[in-house]
Length: 357
Image 1 (cartoon, one colour):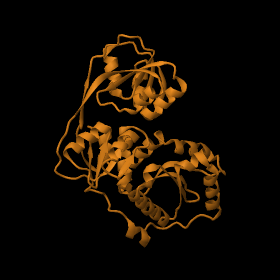
Image 2 (tube, rainbow, N blue to C red):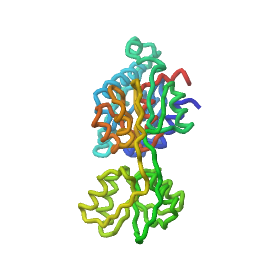
Image 3 (cartoon, rainbow, N blue to C red):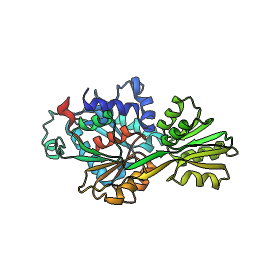
Image 4 (cartoon, one colour):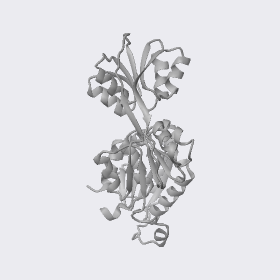
């Protein structure tokens, strides 16, 4: 299986909320009997939605597309696709939730104009604007050691990389004296520590699909899963304000969740169940991109290095907030998984993957 197919399948599995909603209307010829495909490989790109018969492409843009550098890359990408004979309709994610009619009317208008002329791919515009091919000199730094499958996503894309653990995690012994009905987990490390201690875990509220998966694989009941700590705190305030909670956290835990709950008079106790220590390392070189998976990882890297002109890829908004203290060039993963961070890096650097098909 080539790398474009790998990435396409991963993106279909981890589609954004905006993509999922639009796909409900486009799939199985539900809209105007038009056949659309999603996350479809096309030359060196992977497009969000495509109707091949009418040579029409639809792109949905998240927050990171507001970045000036990314806008330039988007414009270049659209020019390449148009030079290949495709029309490109680009919308912000908000349009999907606020006014789908805009998208539907644009599709109808484009289709009614007729099928764009197909080119042979040798249009002078395409050749003049093509990015460097192969990106053999592109090297990124991962601040977390990667699995074999994760490494392959990068290696198959022709991207060089260095990986190290920017932080060290020590699981602590957990001893809970009081009976607490509701437990909060914002990381897998906290779950691992609690499971190792074999204490009775009741109703669980957590952050992240991976944290939820680990809890459920061990037979624990998950009441609510949120994308970040602030969203989880807001849900608890809205739905469970009069209940009591125990927050299992690390020694460097973020302050948003406990402060919001305490401000709203929610009964909350905290217990540190793992210790995070910075594993700082000096790199006497720069990187095209840096993958960050936690605010602590950023703090560890910054202790001995600078970000400079590197493009930073973050696993979520909390990590991105820390990264934005040091750089404006931040790309946030669509979903908080290591694989999605890698996919965003591969997409960003415009790998010329067509030679691998």
